Amino acid sequence: MAAAAFGALLLSGTCTSAAQDRQAAAPTGGSGGPPSAEGSGGLPAAGESGGLSGAVACPGLDGFTCATLTVPLDHSGRAPGRLGLKVAMADNAKAPRGVLLFLTGGPGQPGVPYVARLRQKLAPVLKDYRLVMVDQRGTGGGALQCPDLQRQMGSSDLTPPTEQAVTDCATALGPDRRYYGTNDTVADLELLRRALGARKMTLDGVSYGTYTAERYALAHPGHVARLVLDSVVPQTGYDPMDRAALRAAPRVLTQACEAIACTTDPAADLAEVVDTYDNGVDVLDALTTWGFVDPDYRAMIEALHEAANGDPAPLRRLITGTRQGSAATAEELSQGLHAATLCLDGRYPWGRSDAPVAGRADALAKAAARLTPADYGPFDAATATGNGSMLSCLYWPSTPAPPLPSAHRRLPAVPVLLLGGDRDLSTPVEWLYDQKRLTPRARVVVVPGAAHSVQSRATSDVGREAVHDFLLGR
Image (cartoon, rainbow, N blue to C red; front, side, top):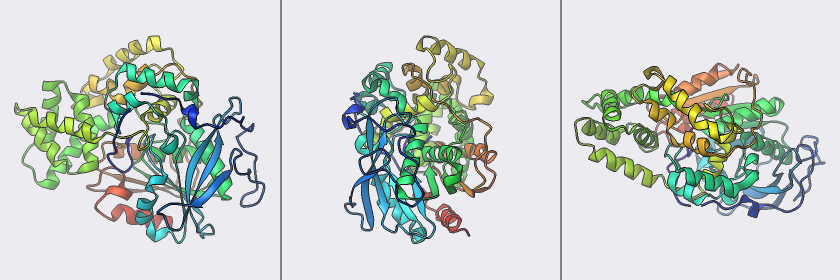
């Protein structure tokens, strides 16, 4: 799952408590806000759970109002505390097709800082839709702060962190870390819908934003008009071993090589490099990040060939430079939130987040021993079991696991656009087709030569035009 929906972000960090951003008052009970008639009165008052407050013109964003959505820390009402989530809303509140809620990636990336960019990309549909973006809990100005983990991982999913950085982060967040799963964000979005007075919303998600959109649609099928899922993470969740990406790497590199008319065999070079230098995680991390920069992977293909022929220095420099370029502040992409969410949402060789820590390493070792080349392609078992997301959750303290939807449940029968790039290693197109099997009304658009976040990053207009046509019902 892409660590960043729109680009290499960067920065630093040790963990500080998220409690500093919380109001002391106890939340309301139930779902965090009273049920209300759509588009009518009866919405929570400003400052209450589910209410919007502090509305002002968004600085530098003509035609947008910024406000704070107040939500309970714990939607069950058992734990006290509230969170304030920043929201940016276009002023055309009576747009004929209603709210278009755009969800960014991560988990850990805010939404509001990207309004200006998305407004440009979605301009052809914004007379028909009211664009809304939100800083999801634990992101942006309310980012969970874990400085050491932030410094080590930046905006990457795959860079391996130290055990100390992970445990320091979880300790600093404390028991409240249990309230940062996707189900909590979904409940926040439902309060946002009520506060906006929208009967239904159209959701457009990128990367982890697709997973959030899917989970919202499963939880609130009657409140979804249509879905755009760009760079798809399937509703069944991401694979912590990243096996689809491991197997897809030769295909992606071969396609890229053909596009630039290279004279090498990058798939064979990749296999030779991993076998010779035992650096699969480093190579996969660099490859995945490089797709954000250049979906032709030109520099990676050249460096892999030199390394396969005995000179690893260019590849090492590229790996080092990629990691330096992936630095990100917690406000740009919170690794504390990233770890908390993935560990709560995920299924791992040891089970869920509530599994005892003591038995996890043995369970992971047994899972690694069962892997074969059919699972990991030109990489190895150490790559599948040693990436950053896997290790973060291996070290994460035991935390109550939230319920997850049934793995066989299908999305509601609303129009859904599944959009991807055939060169994406962050969310490989194989995941898109996994989701298609659970999507009754799917329209599939795979853009040749594109990598991650097709709407925002692809040089071709094919993906953006597909989104525009879909949103306008064409």
